[in-house]
Image (cartoon, rainbow, N blue to C red; front, side, top):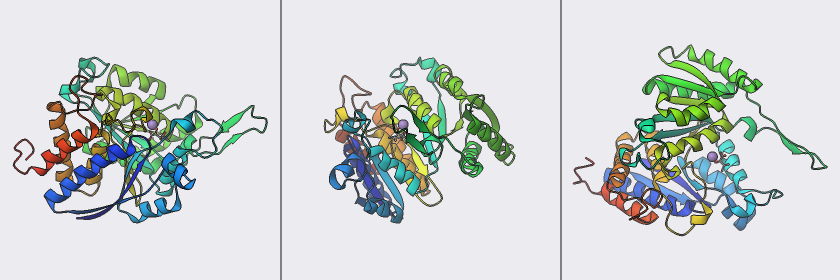
Length: 359
Ligand code: IPM
Ligand code: MN
């Protein structure tokens, strides 16, 4: 298969982790005779520094004409610490999601036997946890009208959802549930928010077309608690933009490191693959960042194009690396590997057709 992949490494550790995903994808292409073409573009603080815009026109154009986008990370402390900054790196990512129409963000969370004791949560609570969050990505409070009063004494963010915005992500979440354990939990705040009441009503209607899926509802505050108390109860979680942002970071604690969590953002036409973690500025250039979240995002890219066997091999290689303790320091304090050494190891496993563990 021929695939044109736009690579947006972004800020902080973005470039070094993305580099490892490219290694892995090239190994997959070699082994399975695919043609993957990579083309880089700037985004985020890196783009503000070079052209004054966190999402230059040329970057959006490249993403639009590519089959998929591989995204690194975004954000820089010089903007976080300056509330008056008008141009911010995060705007690049939000405009990209909107510009490409990526309305659904899919974030799988699972555990590895070897890492069960890495999580601050007790092994018996998290063993077997296997859930996926469907986060609405182009609506809600992230994209509503915003303003700050002229006197600077008040500010407003608006949260709006339309039935259509809810329906399209709900359909994807129900379809995913049908392929999994057939349970869908809508996370909302319907006891307080009007938009959440619209979510409940709409999702109940959509559920009529998926009678084999059990639907339940949780208020987001309770969901945050349940995620820690009993994460194995969840199969597919469907939720709006900001709740999904928050509970997915929370859910990353289950696996033992946020450096493991991948995501796919999809729309009608485009698709983008990015780790859920941020740009980890303190680690930039030190070779300590975990590349696995980005590499598993690359596996989701392969799945997106129905290259399921290839995606399975990447996931299997990651399992082997964890099993053999070939991990960065977030997972292995005593004898850790660098970001690029983990990438090299995975590349080696994937390239070796005689590797009995993987065939
Ligand atoms: C994420 C990130 C982004 C978000 C930021 C960087 C804008 O936290 O992808 O989860 O809030 O969506
Ligand atoms: Mn986030």
